[in-house]
Image (tube, one colour):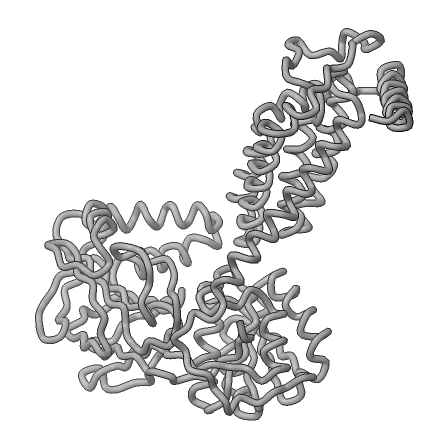
Length: 495
């Protein structure tokens, strides 16, 4: 090490100590009660774990994803601190001379001083959170700053320790975001959809009409900001609730391309409108649940805008359920994700009934308790054979995951239904648990799973509920489930 380097290190150390002494000498009104306790609350990441739990319970789907990224960022920063940081520099802790006794911790840390682990954890969690959900991040930034400052205030770290830890934490947040985006990007273009060469390119949005579910909240608003900036000539129509079907049908009848911004239920309704009008569909994810967009490889509105500008689209399959002759006919319904009869539609029915009064989370728990405790299996005829089932599930394409609780698909061009049955008998809880432990394509006394093009369902009891793409309705007395291969053209960017 040169004399100049030694000189610079000496100057930096002197300034570090002077700033440390300045904090120690200064009186900070009210801080003696707050900062030491805040620092202790952050020990072992407890404060940030509690914050993640609160956000998970009270926040939206995006907030829950942000909390998960914050926790991953914290874990990465902690691993870097404890395996490399503390054992590389090995800087001793500051001497407590001049630090008032009221501020000092009852138990002094025994690890080395550089960098500050508390600061790294605080800024890692907050950065990971803020990069996905700026609103929640803004709430926790003052807390993170206070935790970091408390380490100097209580005399256990030099200011440079805190700055280095905070920088490492922020870097961890950015790295986790990059890894998450790479993982999401790897799922784009699952591989079994055919390219739709006839899809028009709309570089400025002329000819595109986007119907927006105004009830989708901030996620939809963020998507619309991107659309306005990238596709200035697109027409935007905002509506919600009972207005949506008519608005989608009217927009599809006059648009070159029908766009939709909302969650799975809204996207399913738009797919039906686009199919009937014979126009391509552009999906801008913007709802609480975006399973279709995730399985399709759309990570946000920017992806859809890029695909529209380039004119790149693929053909996807749709699921359809058609009332049979015994039901006096009727209009077919369509689903982009899933269709079900039995336990899940009943759970959805109860949740929708109670959510306005007690909130979604509590309503979900109460609905699950009601279904698993008091409901009865549905007795119906499947492909000519009478069956008693707790749950009939049909997916638009093959889902990963065992039993009746699938997770995701690798593609939407398969043209087959993923049909799963949980047979009746006993109580639904043990039966559904047993089916969840069975293989995805097995036949057992409690569970059957297979892939079909068509399934006929008859003798459905009056008042039986069905659900499709998160929407609830009453089932007709008989219906036919089938898959429509390559039924719809949907925009998606090239890999």
